Length: 453
Image 1 (tube, rainbow, N blue to C red):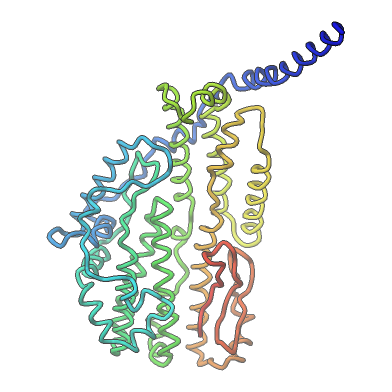
Image 2 (image 1 turned 90 degrees about the horizontal axis):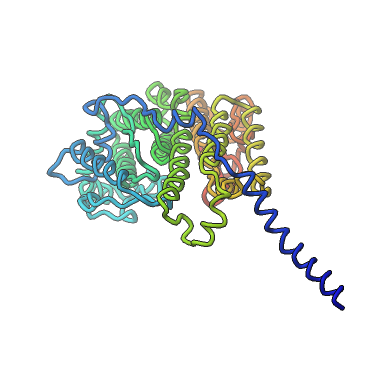
């Protein structure tokens, strides 16, 4: 009996010793953190050169919905300075964007999205043509916003001003209202027969949004410009569909508006490096919080037991490596680009399934959880490229006088329309007169990319 109890006791001790030994092995593997990658350290401390504020339309763009008693650029400067101050005082790392006190000064035009004829861009010209008096009333209410937005367009350059201390961006939400008002103004000018005036103004707006793409530093700024430019391209598509004769007479006017975008307007490397910087700042903020004896998990037991198994600098380095793999997509085209996209997705899935590693296990989990999926953003960029190519094809057919559904189908194979993201060719639906790429889950609502002829 005693012998059996001794054997059982030794077994229990051995059973209890296994996790202790395993934990000690983990501690030995995680005694020292890695030094910060020199390129990441450089990224964390280097600011891009800034253009003079007096030439930069960024501040006036922010100020489009500012109070009428201040110029848009002056109010935009105030907004930016408050954002800088907020960045310096933030002490959280939850990724939320703070609400700035100055936003309470936003001017209200008494307009609701549902009141604006072009809140649904896809039917903008149709709605305004059917209800021109309503469009005039809307534009009268929004005249100040339009004038202030036009002031931003008049600046010779555009660059999103640099915020060195941000970990999450505040963005003044002015673009939806201005975009819908601007589209309504274009549609009303067309309905009233002022075609050249409408196209001139649309061209200035498209140039501005291209400058925004070129000068963006953050993902949200880039996506705002992308959405605006996609709206403008959609308006051209509607214009050629609803007024083909007038559009054909102005083909030379329209063609430059559909030229391929400049290379630096379609590159995402700058945007992704800003994302990498924000992610690294968040991870290293956790390290600073831990060094100052503050609980970063909210639980003393977890901090004591798991804290030594987290190497913040190694975590930041690993996160940066992932971003570098994504930024490499900018240097690829065609099938090489699409294969690299697939490889990144496959690798991310594989890393997510690898839930445990001996070295920096907590950092490994953090990186798998916190790393964003950027594929939908590449798709949005590529959707704009594909949309503009389809509308340029529409213009080419218009110039040639080709409008018959069968003739369009015959012209399609030689058009060279390949979606950059998928490698697919668009499908022509002659009955509904739509050219479209298949629906994809990465688009909001699993939508198709359509252009109506």
